[in-house]
Amino acid sequence: MKEELKLSPKRVKSIKMQEAACGLHCIQIKDISVRDGAQTIIEDINLHIHCGKITVIIGKNGAGKSTLIKAILGEIKHEGRIEFTDLKNQTMHDLKIGYVPQHLNMERNTPISVYDLFAGYISNSPIFCRKNPKVLKQIQEQLAIFEAQNLIDQRACDLSGGELQRVLLSIAVTPVPNLLLLDEPVSGIDKNGMQLFYQNISKLKSNFDLAMIVVSHDFEFVRKYADHVILLDKKIIKEGTPEEVLESEEFQKVFA
Image (cartoon, rainbow, N blue to C red; front, side, top):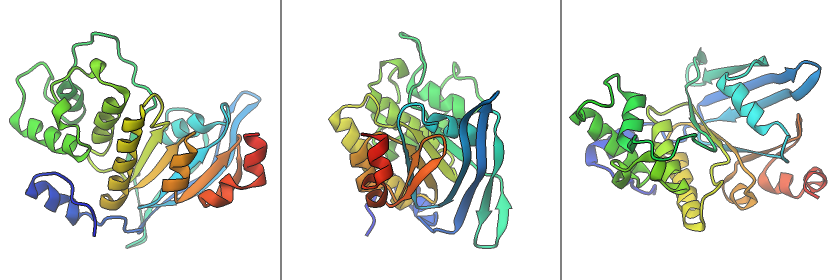
């Protein structure tokens, strides 16, 4: 039985109505390459991802992990294409992507609260106006998914790494995307924050109809949560289950 989220009955019902981990959405990343003049940053990346699955990308610094994320987001020029198919009726749709960056550049003492940050993303109303009750309720419910509702009035610049990550996760799944990208999600987070992150990943996988691509150097996380692992060094040099990749000769050569 799936763990019940600590939400209002209406919100829990709404989440249950989503087909959790249905496996009927397919994302295909085809022949993605990024070049800078004569230099190849990544080359011929092909991935086949289903909802309800966690794909983890590992590799040394400079292997092209963040470049691949930026290419998927459409932030940099690239070759190749990304296709999203609903396997229920074999139709292709626009891919909705949620993204949690490794860092959020924010000046110290910036007077933007978590509410302001969230409302600026989901609402057309100016954030300096009085709080909209409808928007406030939606933000509280989304933050509650990741046990962050108590942070709503805090300044975003004052949050710890783990607190900010929970807020960004809440924003990234509003509305629920087809693909969630997480770039080094446990970077700069303490042990307690890492444990809470692992719990949140389990909630996402169990309760939301989405696929996840995670860039990570945390091999404990890879072993415990990854469904599929990609070892990247400008191109895919090994892929498979966590055991197949982490115990491979290719892995030993990269991380020797």
